[in-house]
Amino acid sequence: ERQKQVFQNEISSLKTIIESSEERLMVKYRDLKEEITQISVLEDNALAETELLQSLLNHQVNHDFCPSTKKKRDLINQLIDIQKQESEELGEAKAEKYRNLES
Image (tube, rainbow, N blue to C red; front, side, top):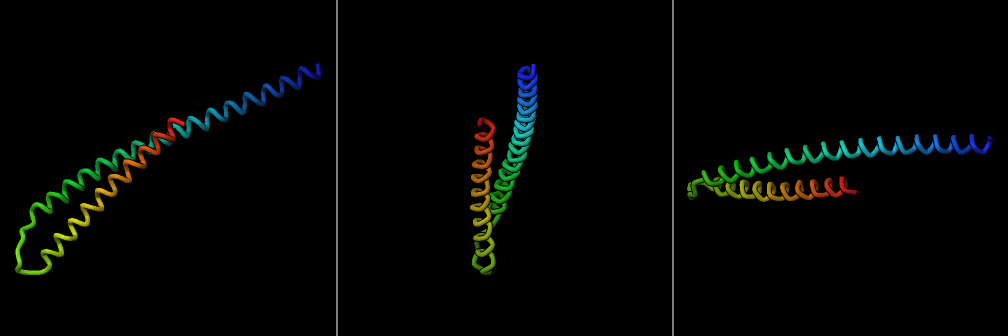
């Protein structure tokens, strides 16, 4: 009888551990899915920002009347480069979240 009680206690303990683990996994899964959604929105925003910057660059008129014009054009090009870098980083972050989701 005593051994039966010990086994029942062990079984009960294992069930609790399993339920707790399942709950933690569900929370982790939900959090990762939420983060993936957030990154997707950021990727969409980054694409829109890239399009705006490219449009801004396309509206620049080259001239030699003032040095600030070249400086402005250079800054817009830098922003476009940074925007591309951000998009790549977001893609990498999203891929990492998907890998975590699969593991």
